[in-house]
Each structure stands twice: as C-alpha cells, then as structure tokens.
Amino acid sequence: MPANDTQTTYDEYRKTVQFQASGDVLSTTADGLRAALEDALHNPAAQAGAFEWFEIDLRSAQMVDSVGLNLLVWLWRAITARGGRLRLKISSPNIERTFRFTRFCERVEVELAR
Amino acid sequence: MPDVRSAQAVFENLEPGSLACALVDYSLPGANGIEFVEWLNRTYPTLAAVMITASPEQWLLERSLQARVCAFLGKPLGPADIRRTVAGASDITGQRRAFAEMRHQVKQAGKLQKAMLERMLRSGDVSLEYRFHPRYDGSGDFLAYHRLPGGRDVFLMSDAAGHDLHALAQSSYFHGMLSGMLRSGRGLAEALGEYNRALLDEPAGQVFSVSVSALEIERGSGCVSARNYGGCPPVFVDCQGWVRTIGTRSSSPLGWFPDSAPTFDRVAIPSGPVWMWTDGLEDLAETLNASSLSVAYTLLEARAGEPPQFVAEAQDDVLVARIWPGASADTTPVPFVQPLIAEDYGPETIASIDRVQERWIRSLQLALPALSESVRYDLVLCAREAVLNALKHGCASDGKGRFQVLYDPARELLRARVWDPGSGYDFDVAEHAATDRRNPVEDHRGLLLMQVHAPRVSLGRGGAEVTMEFPLHPEKEMNNSR
Image (cartoon, rainbow over all chains, first blue to last red; front, top):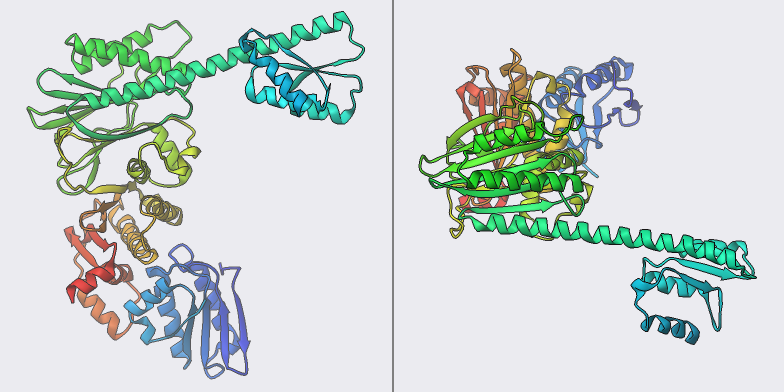
C-alpha cells in the first residue's frame, strides 16, 4: 500500500523528478514508502533518458534506520540503472551523519537544508 | 475607608472563635459591605457572612456570591427572618470550622508521618537516600527500617491500598504491629504471615490490604534477600552489569488470601545500591511515558524539598529509595552505575517499536536533560537496531529480549545493552562493512549502522549480546585521543 501522503512532480526544465516524502524512514514506514516510490518510478518522466535527477524530499524525517537506509540504497540502484542521479534533501543533521558515516553520501547528493 | 477600618476594629476586641456569623449591611458609611466581607474572608475564613440590603439587585447578588456571602436579608428586617438566617449562617460557620480543623489534623498527621519516616530511616547504620511525595497530606506509603539481631537490617516498603486517611491509618497500624513483632523476636516471614492473618480477620465484607516489599541485608552471610507481597521488587545492578530485580512481581498483597506467599530471592550484596519504590512511581512513569528507573533517578537526584514539576502529575503517593546495603551511614558511597531503562520485550514489540522508542527518548530527556541531541539520537537509533535484531532473530520461540540503558556518571557515558535468548550467528561485521563500502549492500545494515553510530560496540555470544557505549561528550573523547 503506497504511503498516501507523498507527492511526485516533474520539473521539465531541470529534468528532475521530485518526490515529496512524509515523516521518518523506518522499519515501520518503509513498506508504504517503497510502494509509493515504485509508483513514482513507473511514471514516464522517471524512465531512462527522461530525467537527470530524482530528488526525494526527506526534510520532515527525523530518523532513518537500517530498513529505511536499505530502501534508499534500493532507490539509488533503481535510479542509477536508469542513468539518473539521486538527490536527498534532508533537514536533520543526525540523518546527515548517518549518510556520511555509511559513506552513502559519496553515491548520492545530500542537500542539508532547514 | 475609615468605616471599614472601624468595622475591622470591632474584631480586635472579640475572640473570633466565639462568633457564630457576621451580619453585614451593604451600605456601610463610606464603604460597602462586599469589601468588608472580603476582608472577613481573608482574616476569619471560617466565619459565615450574611448581607443585609434594601435593594437586592442582580449585580449585588452576584458580587456577594463571589465574595462567599452565604445568605441575604432584605430590609425591612423581620425578627423571624433574622433568627432563621442567623441559624443557617451559624451552621455554615460550624461546618467550616470543623472542616478547617480536620484539614489541620490531616496536615499534622502528614507532617508526623514524614518526620517518623525521616527519623526511622536515619536511625540505622545504612546509607540511603529517599524521596517521599504523598499525593495528599497523609499517605498509605511508608518505608520502615529495623535492625534485627545478628546484624540484619530490614527495610519494609509498604503501600496500603488508597492514598487517603484510611490508608495512612492502615499503614501506621501495619508498621506498628510489624515493629512490635520484630522487636519481640519474631522472624520477618513469620511477622508478615501473622499480619496477613490479622488482616483476614477484619469484619466480613471489608478487604484491607497492604503491598509489601521487604529487603533484608544479612551482613554475616554477605547476602540481601527480598520478600515481595504484591509490591514492586527491589532493583540492583549485578556483577555482570545487568539490571536485575530481587524476586519478581507475581505475588499478592497481604490481606487477600490466607495462603499468601511472597516471591523470594536472595543475592550477594551488590557493590552498588538497591532501588525500591512503590507502585505510585510506576503509575507516574506510565503517565509520563518514561521508564520507572528514569523517574526514580530524576526524583532521587532532585534536591530534597524541591521535587521536579512532573510530580504534580502523580495520581498516587510516590515513595522511592536508594539503599546501599554494603555501606554504613557515615561512608561516602562509591561511584555507581545508574540504570535508566530496563525492559523486556517479546516479538510483538516489533510492530510497536516506534512507541517503545518514544518512551526511551522521554526517559533520557527526563533523566539527562542536558544530554546532547546527537548522542541521544545515536543511542536510540542503535538501540532500535539492536532490539529489532534481537526480537526478529533471537526471540523466535516466544522468548523475551532484554534492553537496558545504564548511566555511568564517573565515566560520563551511557551504556546500552541488548540480550536475546537465541544462539547468535556467525557473521563477520568487518568484512560486511568492507563489502558495503565497495558497493552498498541491502542486508545486515542494522549492524553496520550500530558500528558507525555507537563509538564502542562489543558483541557476545555471536551477537546475542550487544553492548554499546556512548560518551556524553564525544568531542572531549576525540580531543583526548589525539
């Protein structure tokens, strides 16, 4: 069941698929978020060649656990397989540390903003 | 207002207790009767006032009621009306005086109870700290100390059902009887059994009950034992660093059944303290969505007489003590590790882990308000990973996993420990981490997260025991290691 508080838009000028997530990315929320992301990846705008960036807005998240991180790794694989790049927008310095400690930030672009 | 002052002056020459009520005319010369009644309320709060007025208008009635005027007399005054109204007002004064006297007596009883508690606990040669927060003036909770022959110290923490005067009377009776029996040479178990029988002999249709947790320090044998009759079992940290209870909770209070048997346990005298509390503390912890241990710590660390604000949320009496069985009263307690969270979870907790995690956060905020957000985040994230791992892989056959957080003030760190009954598994974390660095993996990421967010991690029994340490000031530790 996709999370019902997500939203996907396409910025044609920046060739960016923008995915707005809501809340923490945890073992208890990852299934719903994965379903919503799968829906977004079915969008024609998210097919190979149609976009350069897939941007996921996680600014409302205060925690990402291992299951949530696995989901983001899965998303990174899906995006890179389509020739795109993944950008993560976050507001939590703690989540930023997780991305840095795990060196995930070397694979994706992390934008820390309030 | 000279006329009001002169009216007040009337009282200077009277014994207020001899007055049955005050008849006050609204139209005092140069002032009004409402102001005078308000002065009466402040000065003689039990004295009922009747307002006399020629024009009982709505606003005057409302103002008078606000000023606690108990009746009105309209002019012209008739003798029968005056007699009837004065009789009613005098009754009200009598009721108010009786109520005020009762309140005074209850306060006195509460003060006496607190003084007795203090005197009793300071009489022994045992080091202890305690905090007592009765919900009202008197309480059904009490902690008694007895020195028994043979170098044995006994602490009896009791909770008589209720938190009212009835409970206070029950509590006093219980401790009076126990004290007499113990001083006349009865053993603790025998004395408690006898009190149980005494409670069961109460008139039919009434159930009087007392929950008791009895801690006995046997210096000769180097042991402490606990008998628990429906109370909260004492808690200590064992030599392996695990938080344990002495005995369990599964027992009934005294006064329920003729064959009431306590849970009983006996352990070596711990190097640190033993914590005891009544169930009012557990109810308060529930209200605060925090662990009982974190509430106990916060209460005990607060200065005596200056309880934390959250005590106002207590719905029951709260009594908590930290007793040092191995230390005499005049010794300075050795540095000790303070448990903040100690909970057991079954696999059903996997689905509710977010709520459980909220309680961890609240417990840490309560006990260590100055803890940095990043350290708290690291601990909670790693604890979540370790607990979920334990519940998914180590508690398959309905076993329970154990999660504990201990605060070590001397080393300025928090230690989180997770244990499961499983057999663990053979897994090379370092190799897995290296693989992840080459190409991000999608499994066993929990262990990798723990490795990077916890400054120190040690795994025992193939990962079935995890210990993680979080310095409170990681930057200080980094500077020292440079």
